[in-house]
Image 1: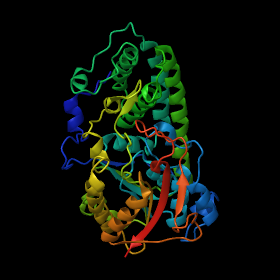
Image 2: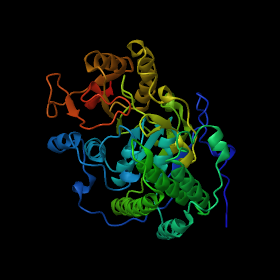
Image 3: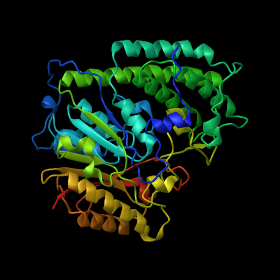
Image 4: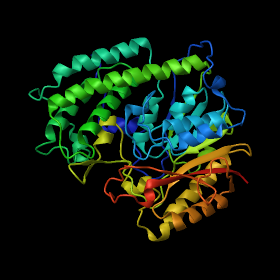
Length: 440
């Protein structure tokens, strides 16, 4: 039995430590499972495109309200993620098979998954190590043998998740606060179940398998803890874990089959770093300018917990990082260009200006830049945001075929969105706008 080191020190050696703002220690992930070429199907007119969008399909995708599903998208509920249908239609409309798609704020990896499934190469960056972990896992392709290993591991694990068994307490993680608010009277069984399961993860041979296993536990723990007032029993958690593993295996198979069917052998690169200065990143210079930059940056003035779960009300826990085996970078403002209550959002716009200056340098005159953004106070924040884009050398492009507002843009409502602590009904943050830009 092979036991791998999962201590804090080992995690830092593996390149996930972003405790330092410079973020010099970036992590690059490429899909390493070779793709067997198969005959091309006729779906999407062989993955469409020469720059002739089907406007009705784009509009339907922008307003899509279906639950997130398909491929590997349901591996984890990342906050403020956009619809896979939206990503898919933007990629089909504004890029061709074999071209490059870039997401500088990749979050849960939706853009990368859809790009790869549609035969495009994709690059994503994010300063959140949890985001990098998810994007790597969701864009991994598994062999039949690895799928078999994972299924056997999951079913063999269930009888071992007995609360009477002795677990190995994750002392280092606990001392650093990663188990905060999950060791109480109602939550300790979940923490111990996770400790038992995480010890077993280390028996899996390949890193792909280990990440998949951790992601299955992450998905299960999120279901059990995040934004819930009633904590499920250990028995319910075991049953839900098997359900999620089965669902995720089906998704991984679908993803691999889809990529093979398109026969394009796309390259996927996940970088654990800021978008600021990305134009100088050696790991991506060989790829050239992207055809499409598709992203959803931090929302101005809107509170989103990218790095925490809320347990039993408003008690926050950084447990997702412990489960994923990654380290948290800092407080919430680290991931959102500064605190949402800052005066006139000056730090936010300053950071956005630096990031999009670098993004603009990655683009060519032909690159389309598509963003989905929400604002806490759109009346003045949108104007300031567009001024930042202009300062970065980007010109807004409006498409009359998509407009549904007097400002000439397309807005969408996001019903029932959970802004966690800020549950105030319909707010500015419950509406998003899709912005199109090109280099000036």
